[in-house]
Length: 336
Image 1 (tube, rainbow, N blue to C red):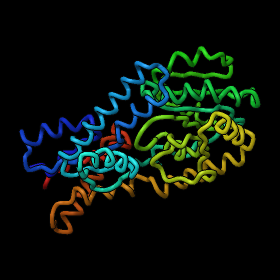
Image 2: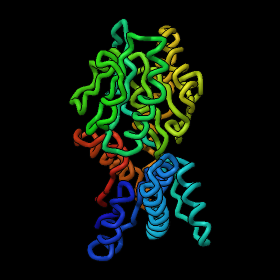
Image 3: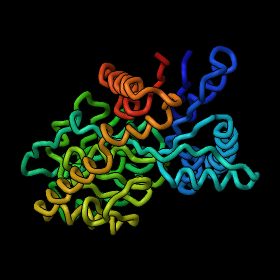
Image 4: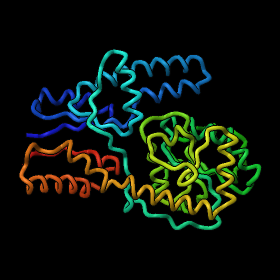
């Protein structure tokens, strides 16, 4: 029999809960809760000027909060990506005298082998955003940056190019009057390396979201200097001014970008510090071992425990199509 049913993120939870009573009644259920999902529409609502959209987003946030709390309580184990997400969702649950399951905090991690440090090309004059733009917080964030921040950067650094990489870019980016030589909207690309090698500053201008921003870990692994909003950097251990620069207002964000553009040696130092920090704190080869305690078979012999551990490692390595996120999280261990 199977030991566990693993649901990766909230939208897979209903399938796991349906599966257990029908096919695997003895299996433990585990939910990998990447976000406090209700926070995403709640934050989007705070920045939405359209009254109807604002109301709809608020309603979605309320319904999602109720659904998340009720779903989490049905799992034997819930693993959280950040303490912030656990705290904010527990705040919702406490209104109904509910205590959420808490099997521990296991962050999303990076893969140093998959993302080696980039060989930077000089002069690097790209200010780059990378992320799927079908995801509303990404689309909102880069639109805010392009409209309210980049003009201030361009006024002092007229040779800089805003590079936006990701599928389904918002059409309004092309309508903001940014000169065509200063704007490169690529859409989806199979390999962003050529753009990243010319990147002077990697920006994460998010105003909404939840969980961790994997794009910051990716940028650190690549050795790129990062400027982010505080929302964009939530859930990540960091050192402001050491391995990242944080700014929330347009002028402060623009000044942080300009500082790194004008001081390439400082930018290189920050990028290197980011990679070292990611390797020390967010290397999946080390951090994923926390999953062993959750999936441990009760009182196994030492050699059986080692066998199970190796099976979990190999299940990651031999499925390269899995993302790093899934490779460190998607374990369904079968009892030998």
